Length: 100
Image (tube, rainbow, N blue to C red; front, side, top):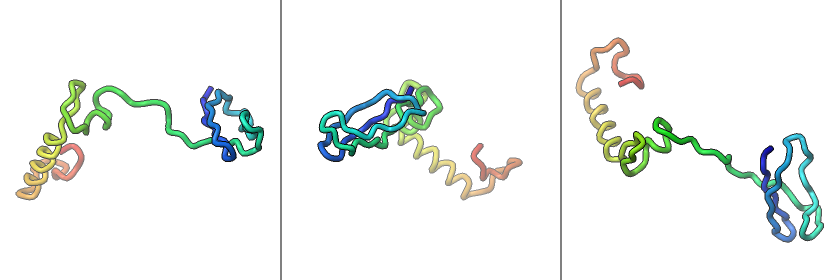
C-alpha cells in the first residue's frame, strides 16, 4: 500500500498516511478538524542503483561502481566531436549514431 503525504491548509498540520489506492482521500484535519486536509504531491520513493544508470554515470567524481568523472566524459565528448568534424567515419551507420 502506498504512503500519501497530507497537509492541512488551515493549521499547517502534516501527516503521512498508509492507504489503499482505492481509498477515498482524507479531507478532515486530525489536528484542527477543518475540512482543508489535502494530499501533497511528493517524489517517488525509489532510486535506481548500480552501474549503467545515469545517476552514477554522470557524477562529478569517479566512482567505484562504473561511473566516470565529468572531466573524462567531457574529454570523450570533445574527442568524438573533433573526430567526426575532421572526416566521416567509415562505418555502416556513417558515425552519426549513438553507437559511436
